[in-house]
Amino acid sequence: MKNTFFLFLTITLLFGCNTSEATKEQTSVKKDTAKVETPKDTVPEVVATPTFNTNNQFNNITAVLSGYKGKANSLNYLFDTVIWDQHSKFIDSSWSRLERKRLKAMKDWGREEFKNAGEKTKIIFYPFSGPDYLTANAFFPEADKYIMLGLEPVGKLPELEKFKKGEPSEYSNDFKKSLGDIFDKSYFITRKMQSDFQAQKVNGLLPILTFFIKRTGNEILDIKYLVRYEQDSIAEVAYNFKSDEKKPFGVRVDFLQEGKQKSVYYFKYDVSNKNFNDTTIFHKYIADNTQGAITYIKSASYLLHAGFMSNMRTLILKNSTSIIQDDTGIPFKYFEEGNFETSLYGQYTRPVSDFPYLNLQKPLQEAFHKDSLNVKKLPFHLGYHWGSKKDVIIYARKK
Image 1 (cartoon, rainbow, N blue to C red):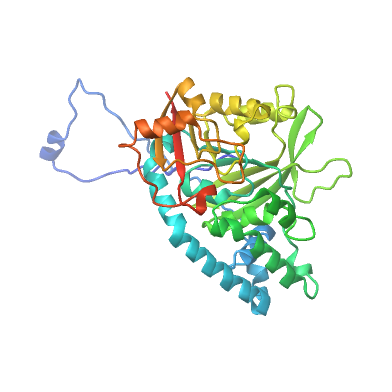
Image 2 (cartoon, rainbow, N blue to C red):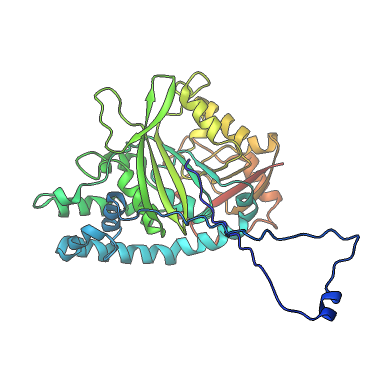
């Protein structure tokens, strides 16, 4: 992660005045008091404010995708076309509706409930996330580093200036379609992403990821890919990196938030035990970079309930200072057995019909019943139960 710049301004004030002898006597220093003299030739040290280039290809392309008219610099002319003008109007109206229905309540509630967790760490680990920077940022806007995992390809941003006749309309339609579930249901559906993020459509999740970063009020500064060299190392390479042998399996997006540089990492990786264990470089990478993190889990297909995900479950329980999740994350019994204290929110019910082989978690059900007087309602809906509105959030804090 790049160094964060701070502004230090040291000003030395030299006072001089003509005083009477009586005044001098009143201001004289006692003999037994140490006298501090100001150096006569001190020059105030001024460290320059860091500058960031927001007029770059990544920020400009994302501004168009985000419907920000007048903010795409060299690409502003695209909004003069019918397609990108209509695209902008759709994004603006959809985002306004999302803010009213869910985002504002999430932001206000999260800042209050998760304040203590956010003060302990600025690292957010979000496994099984897809491109959903949106909800992670809503709950944890002060984080400096977000590490996200999924099975969707990284992809590339569209080269809008090179689009041929008919392509802008096709791309805009595919892009808006890929946002449908997150706008309406608050989560991405994996099987739909596998279709929506094909190369001939939106081309990976990078366009959607940068869209969320941009639309939440930030400026894209730079994008780098990450590649693996066997089991030896993971390295960052330039966005225009080309290799017949190595394909990027991750991406780093640097962005500017209120004058501060921050980063989002996304990795396409199967973290089941066969591929994610202490013999793999990626296990070491995640273990090293998530120590002391807040782990956030939502709409995770109950994968951490399975035996083949035990390595990821163990890493999360070991490394996290706090774990904030719905019931699709780590089974509640592990918090009771481990060194965690928990707070419960919402209303617990059995898994949705997409998971007919799963039953209610009895330990979680009993915890809700036992602590029913203290369980707070959620002022928003989030997760698989978008139909019934019976959502649950578990806030587990390491003792």
